[in-house]
Image (cartoon, rainbow, N blue to C red):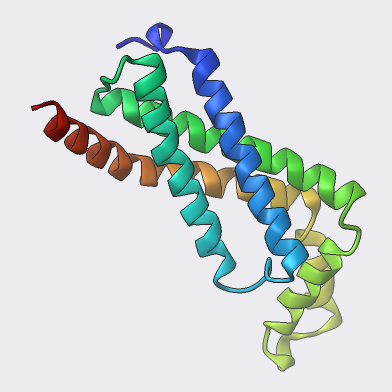
Length: 169
């Protein structure tokens, strides 16, 4: 199937919805005070996986009349992953600039506190402050969600295709 054969409106809608779900998860974790917990990344990955799986199924059933190839499912997962990353990156920039005024300070404090006491020099703290910006956070999340989502999509596509093949037979 060529790229022009995809239902891009449906794909983009699924991707944007997945991005909004990821944003909602991030907001909920931040408000609950667990956003910076070491395990919170696993929650984000699980939400991304669920969005990919349900997005693939939704696309298969609504745009593909219940049929999807591995390549099509993989493309759907990649579009969902990149769209989620883009939505989350925009959310990062907007929310850090206008809503969560203490976010960068909290993140900087966590980075400094995580370093050995002997390394917590004024130069080290200045380097952390220079490195931790809304733009670097947004770019890192865009890359992370896109790459991790693509890897998850490889496996989700195989499972979705295999399960669907069993149902059809």
